[in-house]
Image 1: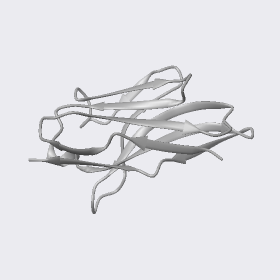
Image 2: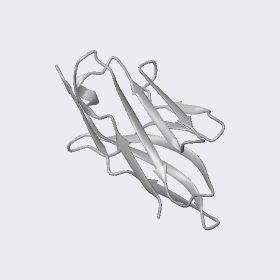
Image 3: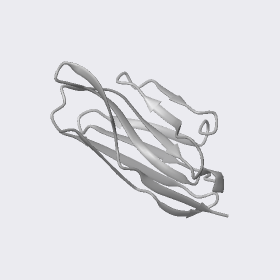
Image 4: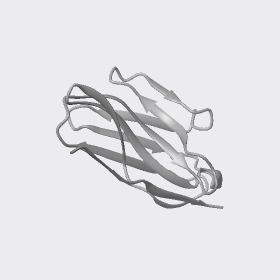
Length: 119
């Protein structure tokens, strides 16, 4: 069974920084894209950033210049470093991974971690 466990959320003042980490465990042949999504109250879940197995990354416009994403393939981890946080960044942040399991690429989600930015 594949599990994604996030950590690093919390409360921060506007202008502050947070680092989110996600560890993927379970019987995985390989990990393809890994990323972070977020969902604010009353809004749809949206992409924050994604990093592929070759370490190319894409960011949502709101994340460009403020967030970075990295991955450690040996440890099956993906990290989102967020800086210059604003109240509008308040949301539940979800880790996401596409993994090759039983010869099939499957998408997995973490349980989410709350990020709250106070003004």
